Image (cartoon, rainbow, N blue to C red):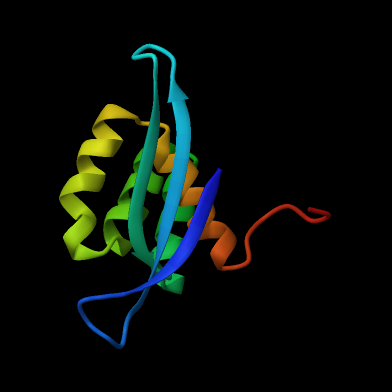
Length: 106
């Protein structure tokens, strides 16, 4: 499950939240906890991600994450996305939810 908590960023005017996701890596036989801090995506970043979604959804989500991740978490997130490509959709969906996108009736 993805959870968010607030944290202060390098620039105090920018608010970052920490998103965490814990899952079982069955191939390695261990539980993995992935976490990174993100700021709220701008309308332009959301629009850019939406335009790319039809052709390359994973890349669209990864780009959105790289645009919004806290600078101190960027390298760690890049490695997580390399090891666990599904995290781009998990964290990207959480960012989309944060700007009001989702399914009606949830």
